[in-house]
Image (cartoon, rainbow, N blue to C red; front, top):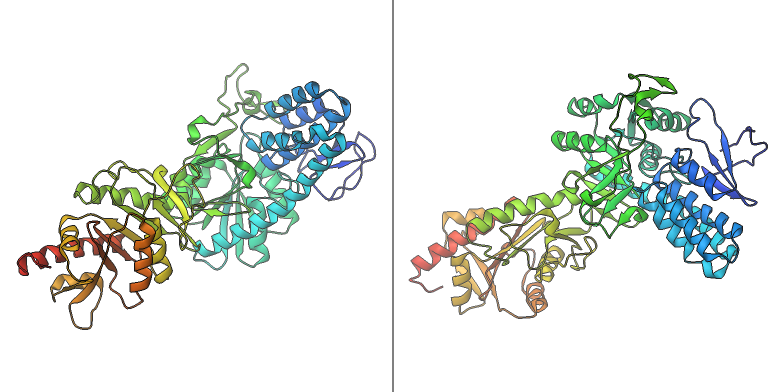
Amino acid sequence: MTARITETGEVPALERSLDWVDGVIYAVDQRALPGEFRIVRMTTVDEVIAAIETLTVRGAPAIGAAGALAVALSVRAHRGDAAAVTADAERIVAARPTAVNLAWAVRRVCAYLAQGPDAVLDAALALLTEDEQVNRTMAARAADAVSTMAGRHRLRVLTHCNTGRLATVAWGTALGAIRELAQRGRLESVLVGETRPLLQGARLTAWELAEADIPLRICVDSASSAAIAGGLVDCVLVGADRITAHFDVANKIGTYPLALAAARAGIPFVVVAPESTMDATIIDGAAITIEERAAGEVTSVAGHPVAPEGSAAYNPAFDVTPRDLVTAVVTERRTVWPALGYGLPDMAAQLHRRGWLDGTAGNLSVRVPGTGDALITASGRSKGALTARDLVLVDAETGAAVGYPDQRPSAEVSIHAALYQIFPDCGAVVHAHPPHATLVATLAQRPAVQFDDFEIVKGFGPRRNGGFEVPVLPNHDDVRRIAAELRARLDHHSAPAVLIDRHGATVWGSDLETARNRMECLEMLCGLHLRTRGGQP
């Protein structure tokens, strides 16, 4: 990035969208693009706050970095006056309340106040270096995830607002993923939403894509949903300003309708953002403070009025997309799949209505495609009132929780993990307590039950001799012992079901519907078995 001489005088050549040189913060003035590439020079906290508030510096990671550098300016200006620095830090955080990165970055460098100005500056500069590394890592992860989900070889992507190097220190989040797809030869073209009222998409994203020689078309904001419905888009890629513990996503206004359209069209809606955007203190997106900006941004364009004088305006800077519309959230450390959980609550409700998942009994899980993770019902949740917030993301083969930190997975997670280990093609597991299966498991005197050649056995797939055996496992208070029994007794030739003494039945299949169907078949077989064997399993 080569700087020009501006009205502030000579400025150094910048390799980043903002940087610190000899006690001065330099940044690309994002208000001037695309007409002029201009560098602004900031030497005081007030100048940094003004730059953030006026969107001279914008984008959650970029304003976080600017906030960190502003603290370094404050420490130099108020040497030895911790109270003054703390007051400046509070003012910096208040400049943009929705983007959690700003508060995160300020807190991070303030932790070094006691060590002096040099330590604070070193922490801020380390944050800048880290940002580019984080962006490149998450961009590669996002490109991997999108490539797994999308069927086309070369993708048509729609993006909103600006999430490139201008919105970060370097490279970008969602736009960084688009750059990565282009480098891999997986990108056909990009639809760029205008992002009214300040046109960050049309002005900034289009400029960055043109600079990178990536094919693009600017899309009228109100036409984006029509483009998705018309089959012109394979994937929506956006950034985020704040993500809750349950993966509700606050992003630039206009993001929510894109998620609705993507869900209706059945295409992926993927959020790419750093871990610093996660806010574990908020569970529900309704609790996010949404910044409302001045009416003048709407009632005028480039200083020219476009509405009657004195018109009021509704001008929120952000909206919140609920997690059930978010296909994936990609950070530098993980890929989380919030929307996939919505098959589990529906299936749990079906089985609960049959009396097979009474109260908090039973549990279900699904493997997340393209990852090593699975979603499982949380511990102690009523299956008749299950929601997607009652799910936990776990490592499929260890059962260790990797997401949704405020929830504990079902106590039977070790059973699910054992099945995912043994059967690589296993995509879903259902553990329930249907009455006939539970009775057969309780009365069985042998380590397996042999089922006769009833027609219903076809629900488990073709069998060489018609009938088949279902293992019966002893029950243990320590569920890990049941999981160990599974590993010891099952192999790739085993029937996809087990009975557990006084503890119901567990079945599995390639997907949740297959597993549910097999549970139904097993319950019917157990009922027939009890009747034809005179009550003796």
